[in-house]
Length: 91
Image (cartoon, rainbow, N blue to C red; front, side):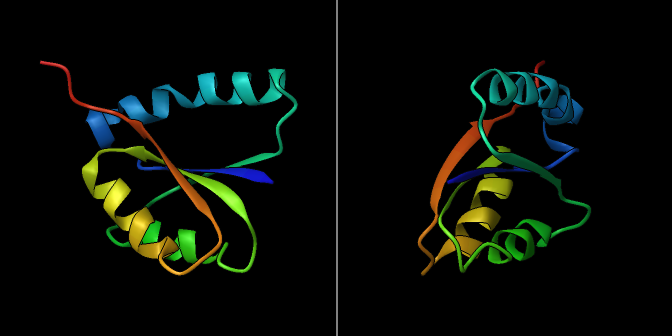
């Protein structure tokens, strides 16, 4: 089973991109098979999530509620699992 991270680079004023190094470190330390994908425009996370509809993976939404919503919409009816790594703006 592969771990797919769909990252919204503008989430949390760019904080989502800053945690990618931590994601890579943990995945490498645990010898996990993984991919990191970045969104570039609205609805991109839906399209990316649908690319994995014929396999069983854990798909992580890395961003805010909009990213999670898009990933979830892209996974409806698939055999994939969803997880979220929330990123928020700090005041």
